[in-house]
Image (cartoon, rainbow, N blue to C red; front, side, top):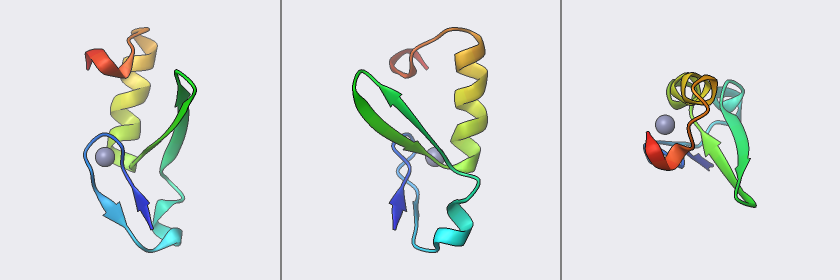
Length: 53
Ligand SMILES: [Zn+2]
């Protein structure tokens, strides 16, 4: 079971979380689903912290 730290989506099937990504922010590990990962990458390109999405 993984839970997206951004949208709260839950996925029990590990095979379906292969496209999910994790990132360490402020010492905490965050998990993002595939959809939010794309948004996250876009935000990272803009050098924005997730707090400011
Ligand atoms: Zn998500």
